[in-house]
Image (cartoon, rainbow, N blue to C red; front, side, top):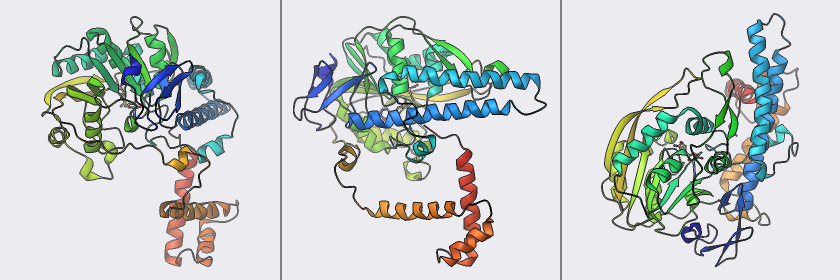
Amino acid sequence: MLVDVLRCPGCERGSLRADRAGYICSQCSAGFPVIGGAAWLFRDPRGAAGEWRARLTLMLAELQADAAGTRAALAAPDLLPATRARLERLAAALEDHGQRVARLLEPLQVHLGAADRDTLRALRTRMPVSQGLTNYYVNIHRDWAWGEAENAASLDLLDTAGTEPLAGARVLVLGAGAGRLAYDLHRRHAPALTVAMDLNPLLLAVAREMFAGRRLELYEFPLAPRGAADHAVLRSLAAPAPADERLQLVAGDAMCAPFQPGAFDVVVTPWFVDIVEEPFPALATRINALVADGGRWLNLGSVAFAFMATQRALQFSLDEVLGIVEGAGFTRPVLREAVVPYMQSPASRHARLESTVAWTARKVASVAPPASRGPPEWIVDARLPVPVTADLQAHARATRIHAFLMSLVDGRRSLADIAQVLVEQRLMKPEDALPATRAFMLRMQEDAGRRINV
Ligand SMILES: C[S@@+](CC[C@H](N)C(=O)[O-])C[C@H]1O[C@@H](n2cnc3c(N)ncnc32)[C@H](O)[C@@H]1O
């Protein structure tokens, strides 16, 4: 049963019991809802729902703006008939896509027009910045439309690394995304419980529909469309069969995982350990805390810590990773490697082959995990004063200067005029002011036209 493995992500002590509307903590009485079919087990459930709702509102506003821009492009004289047809088709798809996504995420109760697009852009939220609603959107289509060969190759590779049976086991799939690997593992091995956890409500909503055996239509927007019809492809998504009730969805943050220590016989991390913002050594101890004594950690992915580009020491290579896993209370991982197809959409000219690593490592010692990384108290409790930290003060100064510079853009001043104001205000030396102003305005110009990560 799902409740048997749950722990309150708020106080991190109490067990959770199910009640009519969701889950209640036995210690601190905090309540956690079920949203869109997934137990919504973020430390600050209301805040997390608010953040995702704001991102969704922004995503829908961006789609509307994109559709309007595409329609506006139709006004150009001398468009080729084929270009006109492509733009018309794309604009209609963008509008329809917005409605489909809004319906799918209806449980988040998004209010269209609740704030204008500029305000939403300015205030856009900071769930992990790298983890937007649409980041792994392409995985949805790979999982449930055209990725049969890729999905099978991933499952087979994982199986060759972790050959022990899973029957009767409690399995957690961390960063389960749209859920295909969790679903396939569950169907092939029939564990007692499989929990598919992710923090992205769009992917979870797709998983919900698939696990329930329902069919869903969503657009794919391929990276490198093959032909005119491939710029927006309406795909029909479906699982081969409904999943049983022992496959469960949890919405939550792995950095504050809502589970009892040692609750799982097997923790699976598919394409996950190298995309989170936490350094791998700390993440490995978190995973240790979730695995039962003698249980296993199964990993799949290319183990490439590209996100850590500004911290070279954290861009571990595979041999370093193996040592870190051992240091985090596991046996040395048993490795299997294979080249697997990756995101080979039939509608795209872009496709990857990924030299993929699967490992299994058994837990032999308990290692204390780092403190859970949730938002600070003043973010959770809106009545607390916002502290004046040195970082915030510095950032406030920078944003005031940005705002001041932008206020100088009036359609008459040149870059040299703006730089001159900076010098007069003693904000910069004359020799620095013009290059800095030029670089800043170029960035503003690029930011203004950029599609943002929602
Ligand atoms: C590269 S994708 C892999 C998804 C899926 N395992 C697959 O193979 O298609 C990484 C997944 O981790 C999820 N994720 C990222 N940070 C997370 C966190 N802190 N807690 C839970 N899930 C997270 C993302 O939403 C995304 O679905």
